[in-house]
Amino acid sequence: MPDEKRPSYSIYIVLIGIGIIVVGAYFAYQYFYTATPVSKYSETNPVSNVLRQNFSDFGLAGTYVKQFDFKNAKAAYERTLPLAQDAYQEAQVRFNIALMDSYLGNHADAIAAFKEIAADERYYPMIRAYAVQEIGAMRTTYPLIKDIPTKTFAGQPFASFKDANNEPLAYAKLFEYAVSIYSLSLSHASAAYWYAKELESLQSTTTPTAQAYIVSISQHLESAQTDLKRLQANLNESSYVALFFLREAITTDLMTKLGIESYSSAAAEALYKKALDASRVAGFKQGNFFAYAYADFLAVTYGTARSSDIRTILAVFTESNATNIAPALRTLFASAATSTSLQSKKSEIVRLGRLAPDFKTYLISLGWNESDF
Image (cartoon, rainbow, N blue to C red):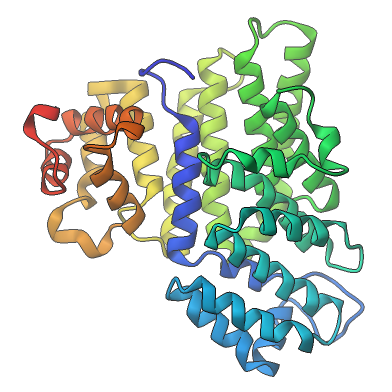
C-alpha cells in the first residue's frame, strides 16, 4: 500500500459496504425490474411488489432486515421460496436469501448461491449481474476473511479470472463478467478501480500493458454512465448511485496520483461531492462514510489549505448529534483509538482530528486521549 500520506482506498469501500447494510440499501435489490414477457411485472409493479402483495412472509422478511435481524429474515425468505410462481420470483427470493447469508457471515454459502443465480439463464440478466457484483463486493466488504478470494475464484468461469496471485486483475475480470451479463454502473466502476490498483503495482505506466489498463479504465468509467441514468431514475436504487460516485472518485484520485493524463484532483473532488449528495438522497445518516471519505481526501490532497472545508464536512460529528451518525462509523472511530489492527485507520483519523478541532472533541468523547493528537 502507499505510504501514510496516501489514503487507504479499500477502507472506503469496506465502510460503505457496512453503511449500505445500516441504511437498508439492500432493498434496492428488491425493487429490481426488467422488461420481461411476464406482463404482470413492470417498472411500476416490480417483482418485489408482487411478492409482497402475495406472500406475507416476504414482507415480514423486509421488516426483519430493517431491524438487522438477518437470521429471521432469511427464514422468512426461505418460507417464501417454495411459493414462487415463476423464475422471476424465484430469482428474487433466492438472491435475498444469499444476501442474508452474506450478512450473517455464511460467506461460502452466499458465494455458492450467487454463482448459481448468475449461471441460471432463466433469471433476469440484471439480477444475475447483481449476483456476480455481490461476490466481488465481498472482497472489500469483508477484507479480513481470507478464504473469500479462494471461494470466489473456484469453479468456472471464475477460476479462469485468476492468474497466479494477481488479485487486482482477477477482480477486474470478475466485474467485467458481471457487465457482460448486464451493464451495471457499479460493476463498471469496480472493474476500473481494480485495473487502477493493478496499474499502481506496475513499475511504469508507459508500457503496453499499462497503457492497455489505462484504456480499460477509461472505457469502464464511460460505459458506467449509461446505467447510471437508470439508477438515478429509480429512487429505490439511490444507494448504488452514491456508492458508484464514491468508487469513481477513489479511482480518479488514484489515477491522478499516478500521473495519468485527463484525471485530476478537481475531478475527484467533484465526484466525492456527488457521492455525498447522493448519500443524502438515499437516506443515509448525515454523519456517514461518504463524508468521512471526502474529508480524508481533502486532508491528504490539500492538507491545511482546506481545513475550513474539512471542518464543515465533519461538523456533523458531535456527541450531541449521535442519532445522525452511522453506528458502524461511530464504532470504527471508537475502536481505532485502541485497536492494534486499526493503526492505519488511526493515523487517518488523527490527521482529521488535527485539522478539525470539533471533530477531535468528538473523538475524545469516544475514548480518545488528547495525547493521541
